[in-house]
Length: 482
Image (cartoon, rainbow, N blue to C red; front, top):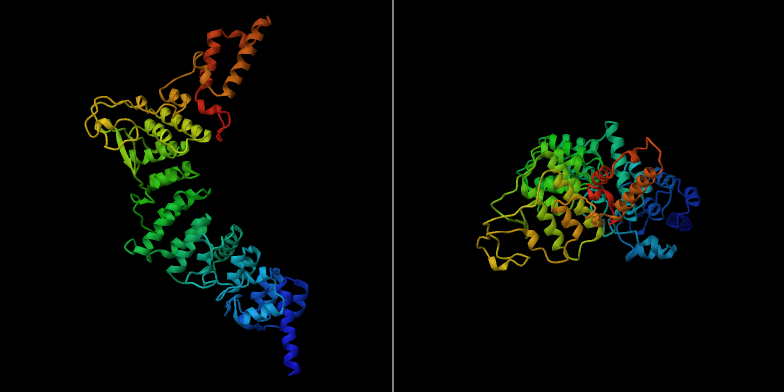
């Protein structure tokens, strides 16, 4: 009886030290203490919940605590609840303990990247469920939340780092298709190209477009890579497209084509050419969607691949649930004109940059003759209904004040002159003022050989005119200087 009581007191002391994060005291008590508290609470569970360091976690495993042991109860009731109260476990620590959790599951929910890394180093299984549910730990790490708590970037990085170590050592063996798909999803979301290539190789011959579940997941990953902001997005697309997986690149994801998703992503100049070379279709509708997103880089990337022609027989097109003009320039102006709330300065600058790309590619505002219009149209053309319109110039129908005078001026092909100088951004006006003042001073100094003094007045104005275009170069990308 006395021996059992002494053991119980010692066990309580071990768990109290672990759950309070007292590393030094816990390390002294752990050797030979592979005990389990009520509710299936192991010393490893307690060490992770108490935010103990890597040395304590390693000591708990060395003492015999199983890595994959699961809690039999949660902190909300039963023997575990009473035990935690007896040893004075802090409430904030108890909050990490859920029924069926492994130590890895507790570390993930707590966002403890260091503990996740150590548990994986000690042999934790990336593909075993970390808590209630069928998905593996890796899958939970790369979904938006784990039991309603966001998984931190550090936790994700710990998983990828451990998996990469195993891959580089030739020890990353994927036991089935499910594990390979979990790894592929994690690699795509985490932007890790070598791990993606490893999983694609493992999936060769085991996935099929006819398998609805596989096809849906693979398409989700392809669209995620296309719209990714990662610097590795283009490399990821090459792995997915040039591997043994088969994709129908004409499909749409979330109502957008792959080229549309890539154009509105963070690295369109890298991703758009890869998709286009692989067979992704670029037509006028795809271009108009990129124009609507006001992504100048995306539009430029698409136009570098090919330039869709404007259909002079049709003035409007339906993009999803929204009508717009088939002319790329008027599509962009129409997007801004109907935007609610009103466009910000940053959006005006993005539109100005996009407009510059379209004009440089040779697109010009279109005027239509004898074209039909839809019954529902946001501008005051309802009287036409579906009857042919003898003459349609969209500039005549934009609501007053909906678009800036500066934007309309550039869209109409306006260029700099002393008469239009007032429309240019303040930065350009200041630079012009400095240049003209310098020219006037050098001209009056009587010194020969000065470049500005050698220029006639009209030539100096020609220099200013050349520097004026594109207007978007004189405003900040954040809208400053507009």
